[in-house]
Image 1 (cartoon, rainbow, N blue to C red):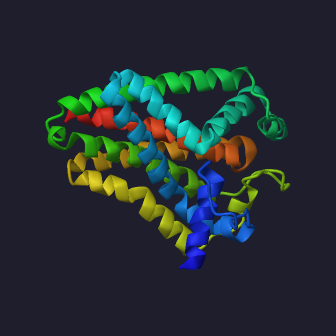
Image 2: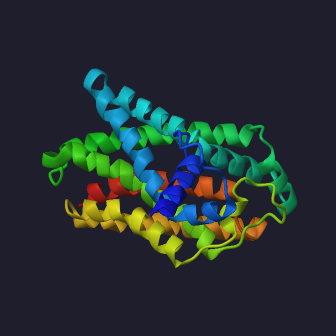
Length: 268
């Protein structure tokens, strides 16, 4: 149990800015095992984002509350995944060979593709979440459990998108040949415990949504279809994935989750 707690705090330290005990470090062995808790980190980030939204909505409009919720999530992770998304936009937008793409993604400076990508990403998230909240307030299936359902939507979006991202580690090879990337240790090895843990924490919030409306489980299809095409694209250009690719996958799949929920509600 003590070792498992250490592994959890390793994941918490690596994926968020939340303070951890002083004895926690970036031990490569624990980082490998920490992948099982990556979707669980989504519970934490999603929960913090929901708390920011719910408390803010008491004083401010829903639009302001949604912006504060997005900010809360970014502050919790230190823009870890958004940075990966921007790097992928820059790398694949400006590079035409594997070597050039990897060099651009490794550069800490943000370029035009990354800046444009982030602006569009945040605008899309804001509009989607605004519509999602408005739709949930008028939806006959969940109106009597509104706060808890919105909480589950926030948590599910963050957990299943992280499951989609970390599952790439289980199915594909790391692209870089050097050890320069901070995400390299995660890609070295895994066991059935990491796979089972990621699946459990990634899907459980969505299973809870099943109690309110079984059709919401259909969101798995577009999320993992998106994951499939992203991985195929990464494989085509860089023969695998990088940490930035995982971050970009998380961000894109989170947006696809929200869009899918809106689509499901519209046609049910």
